[in-house]
Amino acid sequence: HYLYLPKNLAKKAIIRLCTRFSNKCSVVTAPSLPMKKMLVENGVRSEIRVIPTGINAKLFKSVHGDLRKKYHINRDSKILLYVGRLAKEKNLNFLLEAFRVIAQNDNKVVLVLTGSGPALKGLQKLAKKLNIQKNVIFTGAQRRNTLGAFYKSADLFVFASQTETQGLVISEALSAGLPVLAVRDIGSSSVIKDGYNGRLCGPDANEFADKALELLKDRKRLNLMSKNAVKSARTFTVEQMVKKTLSAYKKNNLSPLRQRGAGGF
Image (tube, rainbow, N blue to C red; front, side):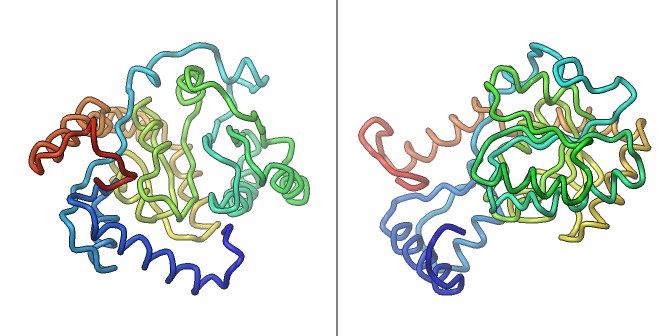
């Protein structure tokens, strides 16, 4: 999205550079199994270990404040929450277009977009153009120790990006017990079990809206997904990921204090 090169040329160049770099490493860490498969398909021959970014579950279980009270959201309104950078690669235009369909079917649903980025003004203009600005709240960037309240106050986490290798905010939402609706991609598919801790769908705004409305109407199902979300989040705590990383260093007789690298070592 940010290279001033033809898209296909940029993609080929990035793949070639990443593959050459990875093949010079003793071990490469991938944040998800689908990402590992992609690296192998691109020609990476080094050992690849799947080690997602660890989540500090305690941070998102603590609640300081109330999202509804802070932004004057009615108690009977349902909240769809997005947390993350407001940028082109996050596919937020799609999210607003899907929300228009949702709002047309249920005017008591509110979309809260938490974060900052270069796409903010464009998204605000699009919200007005779609006539959904009254139901869309842009909160700006928030401190991480306040995000627990955001996750706890929402009914469903929504995510449309198709450029994630892991989808870190998805893991955070699940850790806080918030079910997720996301567009199916490498990052979302590695964390969300469709029908268990959330739902996955294709890149179609109407399909996304239909699944959101279906979940919002079924409180019993959402509550069950919330419990499952917490269970699934236990597999990627920061403590477990540290153990996996240290194990990779020890196996290759490497010292994490001496070696440096980004994603490989």
